[in-house]
Length: 231
Image (cartoon, rainbow, N blue to C red; front, side, top):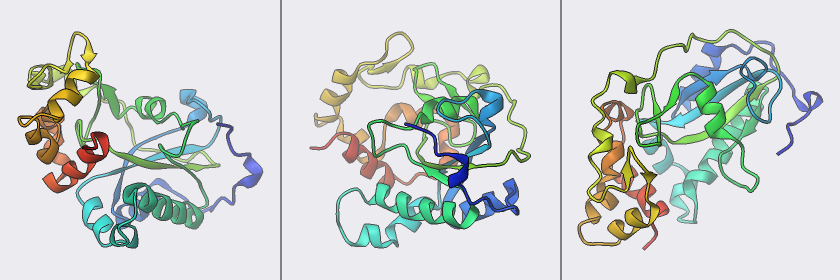
């Protein structure tokens, strides 16, 4: 992916972190991290400010009230993200990036880890300082200018955790030794016993103490699990 040129931006001189966060929250999303690509050497970006957007408690009601959900066409989450974040980028004078639509794909994992708010968990999956392992990046806003950001220098929450994520998976598909056994995971999800995860969400991700802060409803987890493991 080639970064959009500076000339393609229409920067809003009134942009600030507080103003952006307010717009993000009004849309039903949360700011999950922010960084200066020049400082962090983020992949595919060289300048400006990048704001990472994700889903939390307000996202699911916003999605279910949207035309993308009601038209019953495929990929309502991605289509909602394209419209909402695309409009937000236009209003705020930013360039929108999305974690889907590739290949090539935008390097959201690299950006997330360099934001100082997302970390690698003991089982290899990402963990966030607010929503735990219920991470759902929906897009990012890239601004031309560098503006002040909140401090994000806290250590990983895993350093003071008893790591229930390492022992929760019923078949050991996610573990601290080999990280992720894809076949074991999908085989379990296809079984009768695995319907608990299919309808309620991944047991490992739910075990993370911070995941409770995500406000994730079982209905939303079931939707994502069905997309992950179609029957």
